[in-house]
Every structure is written in C-alpha cells, then in structure tokens.
Length: 81
Image (cartoon, rainbow, N blue to C red):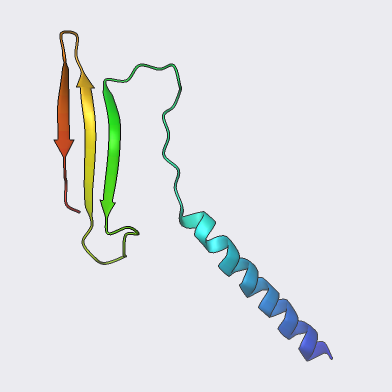
C-alpha cells in the first residue's frame, strides 16, 4: 500500500513537470509601452523552421522601418543563426 502511494506521488510529480515545461520555454516579445516612440519599428518576423529545433540551423527574417528626422528608411535583415 505504501509503495503504491509513493508510485502515485512520483507519477503526479512527473506529470506536473511535463505539463509545466512548455510554459517555461515560451517567451513573449512586446513593446515596452503603447505610446512610446521607437527609432526602429518591427513590421514582421519570420522564423524558419517553426518551431526552431535545437542543434539545427535557423533563419530569422525581420522586416523593420527606421525613423530618422528627415525620412523613414526600410531595413530588411535575414541573419542566419
């Protein structure tokens, strides 16, 4: 009976860890404030492959515009990680 209770407790602990694991790996990205003016405004992000696989190459395509005092310039960046 005691062995069965310990087994149930261990199974409960592992189940809890596996259910919480995705929440610890996800990261939200957001602007600091809604009314703040930023020099660079990100218009889109494409990540390939989606989801990223550990140990494999990944490509990030980031489209953004740069604000200057005289004009707005477009920046397209595709760094390979």
